[in-house]
Structure formats: C-alpha cells, structure tokens
Length: 217
Image (cartoon, rainbow, N blue to C red; front, side, top):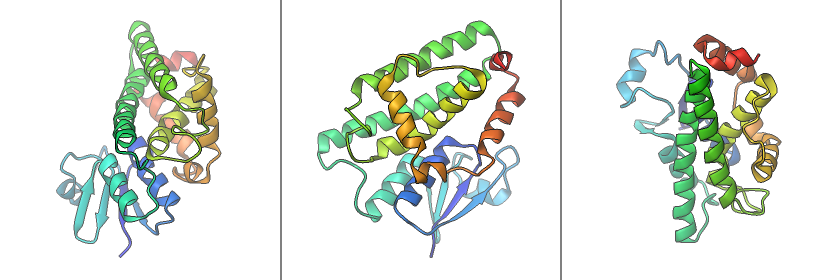
C-alpha cells in the first residue's frame, strides 16, 4: 500500500517529507487540507493538529523529522552519514533548522518595525551559525545530499522568495549559504516538492498577516 502524506500547501515541514519521498523514488499519495478548517478525520489522527502526517496503512506517523528518518531507514541508501558522531551533529542541525522555520514565520508576521528588525537580526545570526559549520559544499556535508540539506531546502526557498519580492536579503554576507541555496533550488526534488502555485500562496499568506514586511513592497 502506498504511503499517504497529509499536507498543507505552504507548510515547510511537509515540504521536507515530500523532498525525501521524491529523492527516494517512493510512490505516494498526497492529501491537502486547510489547517484553518481541518476535517474531523484529520484531528482524529494528528495528536498535535499539525502536518505532516504520514499514513502507512493503519499506522500513523507524525513530526517531519520522525517521518523523514523512517523513510530514510526503510528506503536505502541512507541520506544520513554513517559516522555516529557526525550523524548526531546532523540531527542537531536539523533541529536548529526547525527553529529557524519558526523564527522566519515570526519575522514575516511581526507587526512593527522594531520587532521586525529584531527578528531579521536573529534569523541572520542563526544563518551565520549554519554558515560557520558548512563544509566546502556543494551540500552541507560535502559532495552528497543529506537529511540536513532536505531540512533546509524549504527555509532557503522561502528566503529566496523574500529576497525577490521584498528585497529582504537575509543571506547577505553568507556566501556558502548563498551557493547552497542556489544548488538546492536547481534540484528536481526541491522544485517539485511544492505545488506550482506555491510562490503566490506564500506571498498571499504574508499579505494576509498584515505584518511590517508588507511595507517593503
């Protein structure tokens, strides 16, 4: 039975799991819901009321990091490094990326200039920390794609859109991450990990939040 991914069209955490599914060549179904008005059946299977949810027959998995580890382990070759210490460091970096997603959300919903600038500085500082740990590329660990790259692809896609439409360059002075973003944006699995209308949906969500960032338009 094909796995089914329960999704929300602009969720970065869902996008991580789609990238894994595409990279592994796994045949899957995807079901989109409206998180503002979720169906009862979804609330019955999602402990936190969040996406992604991966339904494997009668078994339900939740949390993108858990889902991605399961997909990676059951569909070799692994996208984790074999060295146990490096693998642990990669897991920590993935968790850092999860928090970065939340900080970007706080940035685009900040209501006044002071709060907005604080979040911009925080996000840029966090990206600088990632830059300091980055390999020589083109991927986070070097030549091979890893689960870290999968975790950060949605972050970098959104930052590229913010730069394009709001002239907000949060990658300024971070040449390794700039190159990383460019590399990932050209990868087929990343390009196909969102619906075709994703850029407009993402921008519409920012406009709807009426945050300070809209003054940059």
